[in-house]
Amino acid sequence: MLKYEVVVIGGGPAGLAAAIEAKKNGVQSILVIDRDRELGGILQQCIHNGFGLHVFKQELTGPEYAERFINELKEMDIAYKLDTMVLDISEDRVLSAINTKDGFMKIKAKAVILAMGCRERTRGAIAIPGTRPAGIFTAGTAQRYINMEGYMVGRRVVILGSGDIGLIMARRLTLEGAKVLAVAELMPFSSGLTRNIVQCLDDYNIPLLLNHTVIQIKGKNRVEAVVIAQVDNDKKPIPGTEKEFDCDTLLLSVGLIPENELSKSANVKLSHITGGPIVNESMETTVKGIFACGNVLHVHDLVDWVTKESQKAGKSAARFIKNQLKDSKDIVKTFAGDGVSYIVPHMIRTHNIEDTLDLLMRVKEVYKNSKLIVKADGKIIKEIYKKHMAPGEMERISIPSSILKEQRIREISVAIGKEGE
Image 1 (cartoon, one colour):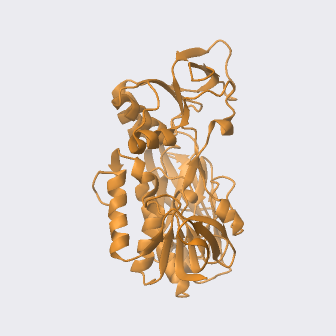
Image 2 (image 1 turned 180 degrees about the vertical axis):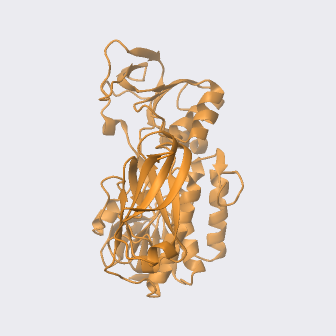
Image 3 (image 1 turned 90 degrees about the horizontal axis):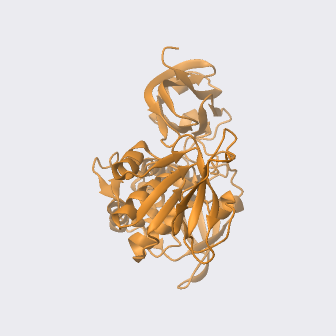
């Protein structure tokens, strides 16, 4: 059986940052496992810029951002295995893995960091009726075909869903000579970043149809047209609002699902809201010594936040190995109040917070001139005024550890309030 102090599953931005931070904090024996043929994860197909503004104060492409961490990983002599599939994890942190070079492996780790990322929802997940012709892709698959494999997926395109990948692909396809006819969004607001709506749709005169969905796909061998209709408050199509678009391609950008099959095999408890593990202040899951970070934990808007969160997971794994993380029966739970969908982390052991407690969350709707109100056991401890908040953009709140350690708190809540209240 192979033995390592820390095993990181996933060689994308989360796994790379976590492994490097664990090494910086004194862990000598680290193994990164990835099922793909190269490190870097989804960043390798994201050739647009906009990465690294917070971490490096520079605007980088996805491959450029990944390269910095890959180079650092190699300079630190951190071991990694590519084209390797992890099959199973036990609660006592024994992994089963396989590849064509080493065959079947059993790997024992003192700590495991889950960084498997997420996958796209497909047509089957949203049950679009109609025939099953060629020309229907998830946005990420189309992105890989165009940016890495060199294939053009279509010439006249309709996009369903306004997630960031779909918005970015609207621009990418336009630059490659395709005509993007429309982006339809079921919700009354986009689930993507505002900057992507402006830079990828508005700048190219691509219409965004809010409160719309695809109700029919036409074509036998290849997509020939899609029918879009407006929806009511119950998200049901409104008769008489149908519009038919003559097209050969439909891209789906209808949500991301954290990849947690391995987490389930280790009996890690998952949040029914985020789909990711329930974690504490140290990014440790409900199974001792197993940590989680990045999009496997909750879907992020910016890779910079993935990096910062994963650095915390890597440092925490190092502290766990050194027995520096303190167990406590005094658990502070976080609670998403009015207007907030969820908060990560879900529970807090105040003794393990070093400087600040960072809360990450998403709001449920678009809010203007509002504020985030943080309460400890019902008492306001912080208010942050916001001109604009939207579900597509994550919110972050930092709370000094001194506030939490000075008193015995049972619950921290965050809710939306109007300015002036």
